[in-house]
Structures are given as structure tokens and as C-alpha cells.
Length: 151
Image 1 (cartoon, helix red, strand yellow):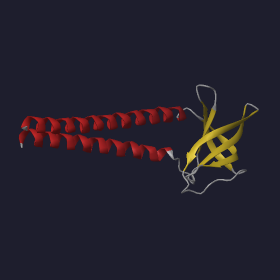
Image 2 (tube, helix red, strand yellow):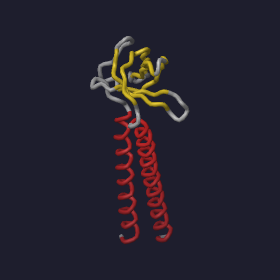
Image 3 (cartoon, rainbow, N blue to C red):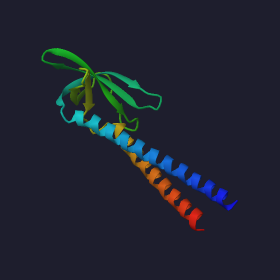
């Protein structure tokens, strides 16, 4: 009977440990993806563009489409989402942007303005939060295991 009770406790510890490891793996993958996405932005060119369209999400965040010219060609690029907590820009406003082309040749832009805050900056906070939860779960699993085996 005591062995069965110990086995149940050990299985619970293993389940918590596996969940914790999964959370840590998810956090590290998210961070790697975000950092690789940001590395593309380090090779961008800068210019001025006109806000063409503004699209608001259900949460109030804004995604902008900006128009600019490169080598005499008019290009419309999509930006990332920007926080709803900052002053939004309106169609027709001129903004300084950094732009780059993805591997598929699709233009992407980053608005270089202090008035807007990219939503992606908040995602790093979520990665840290997930990692902290994973570490806490590992600690809980170790404490539960030690308690089950020695007490």
C-alpha cells in the first residue's frame, strides 16, 4: 500500500516536471523566433513614408500600411502591430520608417517614431513569464519528489 502511494506521488512529480520542461522549451522557441525576426530588421533601409491605411484589431492595437518609393517604384508595406496605448497615426501622416524585404520579396516596415510602441516588445515579457512559471514548476516537482521519497 505504501509503495502504491509513493508511486502515485512520483508520477505526479514526473507529470509536473514534464509540463515545466515543455513550458521552458516553448519559451526558448518563442524567444528564438522573435530574435530571428528582429535580426531581419537590422538590415533595413530608412526612408519617409505616408500612412496609407490603418487597421485596428479587436484589442485596439493598430497595424499600418505605409507607402513609399524606392527606385521610382511605389511600394506599400505592412507594419507589425502597435500598442493601442500610444497615440495612433492617421492615414496621410508622414512617418520615418525602416523597411526590408522578406525572403519571399514581401516588403515589411517598422515605424521609427517614439509615439508608437510595437506589440512585439510585450511578447518578450510573455516569454520571460512562461520561463519563470516553468522554473517554478521544476522547483515544485523537486520539492514534491523529495517529500514523497524522504518523508
